[in-house]
Amino acid sequence: MTRAHTALVLVDLQRWIVDRPWQPVSGAAVADACGRLREHFAAADSAAVVLVRYVRADGADGGLAAAPNQFVPACAARAGEHVVTKHGLDAFEGTDLHDHLRQAGVTKLVLAGLTTAHGVASTAATALRLGYEVTVVSDATASESDAQHREALDRLTALGARTSPAGSLVASETAGS
View 1 (cartoon, rainbow, N blue to C red):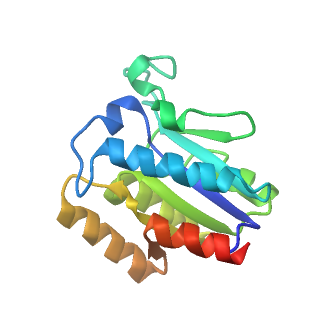
View 2: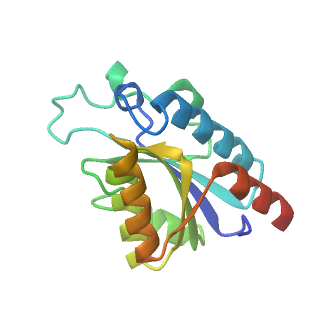
């Protein structure tokens, strides 16, 4: 997979989500892996980085300014990165994500973040229905249990997504550049 027309989409890497107990790796390990992926993708002018965050539509969680809703430091928004705010599981539902990606000429998505079975899976399934090529970074996402994580990856593979560990993806990206 080359980086041209590719976007890295990092899902729900906010403090209150990252700090919960996840498997097969911790939220901190997911955030670290996402930070490394972001550095890799940000190094290519032809690759886009999109950050997705969840906040409650009714504001009961304090909204965007609330400390728990802030991105963890390794994944804080940077200049030039598109930030999508969602109110449900799917980053496409009720947001400008599809329009933004289409305008940028993106045809391939690399997804990582939290959680495999919820935000990542919902976003990946919609992306596949919309015609994007999707790769889920298997070791840069986690769920409530190892079994739930693996089941979500298996379901996404059955729908047509690829799964790849970060190291293999970065190696293939480097070789394809």
